[in-house]
Image 1 (spheres, rainbow, N blue to C red):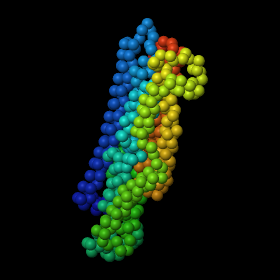
Image 2 (image 1 turned 90 degrees about the horizontal axis):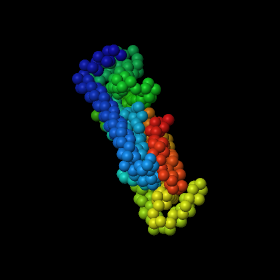
Image 3 (image 1 turned 180 degrees about the vertical axis):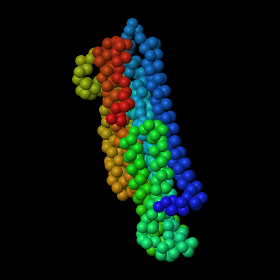
Image 4 (image 1 turned 90 degrees about the vertical axis):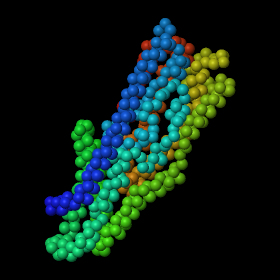
Length: 422
């Protein structure tokens, strides 16, 4: 084994290729880390800004220690944060295509959640240059580069018969040669991860998961490349490289894309921007409806407020927020259907991962990073629960038509971003 390492490291092209892989692995980790640091910096800035704006609102709108509940619901924004997990840098996943800071008011929630949504996590195929991307697409190419000519190179140098005659066990000889290359490939992908984890004192369990996923994926491609290049007629290095590169293209690009197309056909998904548009239309249409058409269905959902004084003026905050919420209620079936389709696609992708190693690796690393569709939906459900808490904190002052005290304002619910990771 030691002799094999020496022979490999004497080849300048081999050393250059391994160093390039080592450097790009480190760069992929650094790029993912910087993206997460940017997200965390934006969240910290938003938290400071939110606290300052709430103080300014109290200073400008309080009158004798009280506030108008309608103004609180309309003008005060509450930030909902999609806080990155500790290992989110390893696979950015949906974090770059979904908002990590959302400003939530007492208005209809669905319009706020989906307004401006221009990307969909299920459409993201290649993603950003992070460790998951680098491992999935380029570790197979490194395996092909180092393992495609195990026998062919010796045959071309007219040493093949001589080497096989000297080896007491040819199978053991080729096994050591393939294993040596596999260990070097694995080192270029795992050593930077280990060093990164030590520098930033990251948790051990996710580290072990990342290392295990990387090792299994590289092992798969090592076995595939070695089996192909060590077969009896594998004496043409160019043909071996072309065949293995075709297998890489099929496994990492063609079949995953075809799988995505199949998923889109099998589980159709309503566009989020369409939900936002429908919400806006329902809200705009409510202005022209008789107020009873809004308030009666609302009171059926919230009978505790049905004895609230009737709305006789042209405008009242409680009527305004009631039709905002009723727009959410009318769209709930569509939102639920959309989330169900996303979950069905996610489950189908998990099953496809049993057949396609590239999909399995991507999903597994996104699970470690907590950046997959499941965590996205959990975050949105957490926002929905927060919005509900906010409504129930302000509704009593709205429908009882009482002043909203400054103390009650300071006791309003605060979004707990850590709850998403539990």
